[in-house]
Length: 110
Length: 123
Image (cartoon, rainbow over all chains, first blue to last red; front, side, top):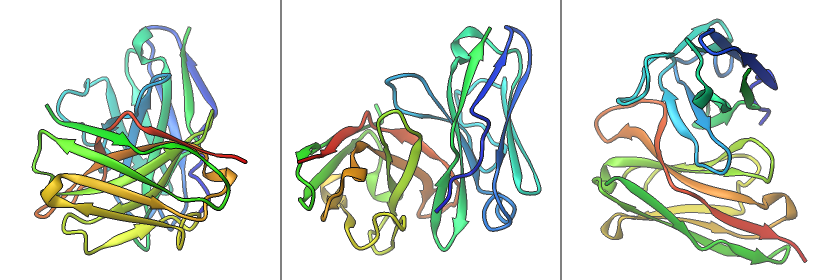
């Protein structure tokens, strides 16, 4: 089960917007509106940022937004802040009742 | 508060077995689907398995199918993962997580995570 493809790293200056892509196939991202995004700080458990492509759980900053086009999902961080420096993972339903995570993206705030 | 606590990790030889547990509190455990996810040292997240709220439906990643078994005891608010025929590549931090999907609604996301328990497979 090959992972979804994410850029290894993305960086931005404080206040800028950055976008992380998550590329799958027509068997996962392209076929279902079941994409979620997670933030993981070093040594910590992942935290859910986005579910069902574009919905934010209660308590998650509205600086985080999700979208999808074709086989690619995206996470945008608007007005990136120092505390946003972390690893980010996408995940998608893949059919046959299985899930798949992305390769992960390290976000650096310059 | 809503909490998941994993236990049961440790050092085991290749071919050995281990049983992981995840104790849930602060929510109605029997309403929620649950998953196990693992993270090898310095690597990304890998979904391992999930189980329906009743326990009747279970699914596994190809990498663990036939070797791992997920189960739950709703009376004890506990989730389990039985790991058999362990291999070096199973070495990882194992997280349990609450799925947002419940008996009445389907959403895709894992909104509560434990801190994980470490499994090391080495001779």
